[in-house]
Amino acid sequence: MFSVVPGPHGARVSFGMVSAVGRPFRGPRGRLVTGAIEHTAPLPRGASGSPLFDSVGRLVGLNTHRVGDGFYLALAADGDLRQRLDALAAGQAPLHRHLGIAVAPAPVARRLRRSVGLPERDGLLVRAVEPSGPAATAGIETGDLLVRAGDRDLATPDDLHAALDALDRDGAVSIAIVAMRGADERTVTVSFTPPAA
Image (tube, rainbow, N blue to C red; front, side, top):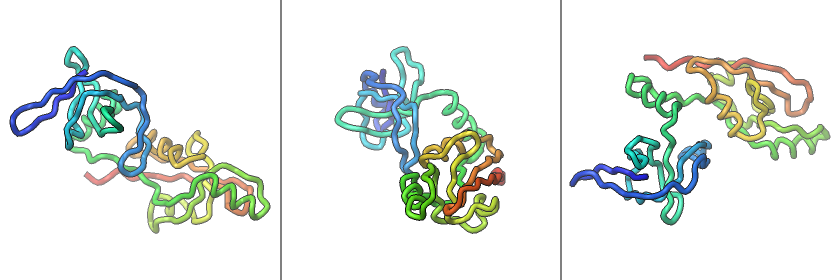
């Protein structure tokens, strides 16, 4: 395993071993990223985005950051990463789909429901809704409890991110909602308009 980092005096090559695969980590905005390669090929500061190769020179990942003394992470060069790179090469902007809401995690929602005498239920409590955002347009309101997106039950924000990431570029998702002070479930459909070219 080796990394190649371009520099002002030519490329710098460092060698190391794979120490783990399938590692999850948190991205810069707190999003969970899965499937990373942990390795020991030393990287200088500013080497994020440099390639990681296997012993015969095949690209296996893109370096992201250091995780401890002598350990680094790389995004696996899988089909998903290749599709994103192809989209960038074709001039398509990266897709950062969001609902336009702020949520509280399941323990907060359970505690609030218990405090008003309702049965506990996992879900994400909507704390704020962005006016004119996709969620507001679909009818999601502050105080709603989001319990399912598509066929995925929602217990953590990571569950919601995963459901949104699984959508097609111009897809829509059905979200099951329970009013915070009620038990009846309703479903809304949130549509996402592709960015203008």
